[in-house]
Image (cartoon, rainbow, N blue to C red; front, side):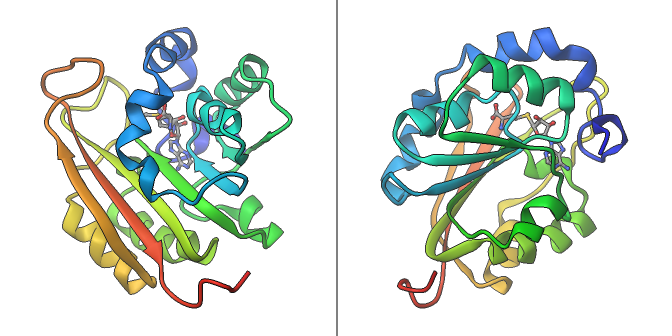
Length: 209
Ligand SMILES: C[S@@+](CC[C@H](N)C(=O)[O-])C[C@H]1O[C@@H](n2cnc3c(N)ncnc32)[C@H](O)[C@@H]1O
């Protein structure tokens, strides 16, 4: 798979230095503190979809989680793996909406993170991806979406995605919303960007594997 051919990844590979500066200067704790109480404790298996520079993969690995980090842009994936070396992180070249590589493995996860990636998919891709994401999470596990609003950076492909659509798709796929928050301020202080954070729990028998 080549990152530049995949929808959603446009505009990343040619800005690697800038992205590492931008994403690595925000702390993992600042991004995720508000939702950590929802997340099954370590050690458990976490899938980070669209892992970027690996900031969150590294943060979770340091807390004792086993992290599978999916990143389709090879320039990002390779440098991230070098920067955040950890035996608890496995990097994979895979891509929404199909997630062919991770789906083929038939591994289930306790936590799935989609931080600043869902708005890269168009509506039909989001409809296609949600049941596949739900199929990767154990009953009782959680899926966390952070969805960006506001003008996209030059060259990126992004869509406006309302929280109601994501909640409805997740419910149809067997998940219930347990937290819904809106942040009018961006952690980097960009004034025209805001965020929705949605946390879902997979329904069903919590003892199943
Ligand atoms: C805004 S960055 C966020 C990176 C990281 N999650 C963070 O919060 O710092 C979005 C990431 O999603 C990845 N991405 C874009 N389209 C994707 C797709 N279709 N499947 C998986 N990842 C994708 C990009 O390559 C990029 O690394």
